Image 1 (spheres, rainbow, N blue to C red):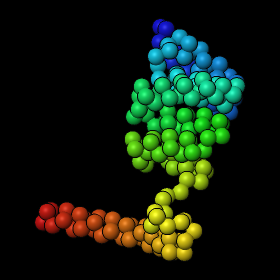
Image 2 (image 1 turned 90 degrees about the horizontal axis):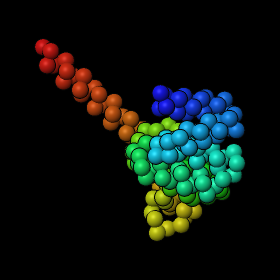
Image 3 (image 1 turned 30 degrees about the vertical axis):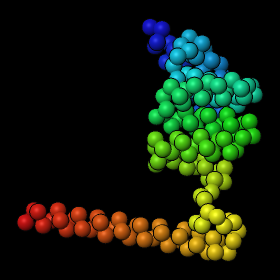
Image 4 (image 1 turned 180 degrees about the vertical axis):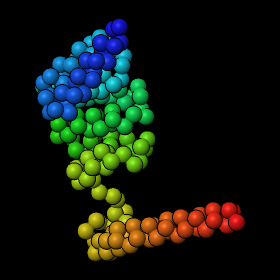
Length: 171
């Protein structure tokens, strides 16, 4: 019964968050968290909302970090922690946390979108040269434009080979 009502409070909080009602979302997450302080999900969302709505950056970082440590494989916790870092004007910390989250879900669209918003860039092709060096610039543009085409062509060829192999087995 108690777990049910906690989950309902959490779901309410998620709906309020979806509706951009940060005040009510924070209150719902706070109630759920205060009832079950060991639940990483409640911890993460309450911490993120407390930082975003009330400016409780320290609390947000503490709770979101604890949630990440507790359930390190849940990428949504990395996203929440990164949002707290952004609120704290710590862009570098946010990027670092998001990249850690990608280790567990390399295809996570939300993390990729957040990294693009933050302007995260890959390392220069030749690391010991400055990013603005013409050689680095040329190589970076070359790889960015040609590699996706090469990779997609290789995937297409691989698919075609598998199709042909599948058809040959049926004969």
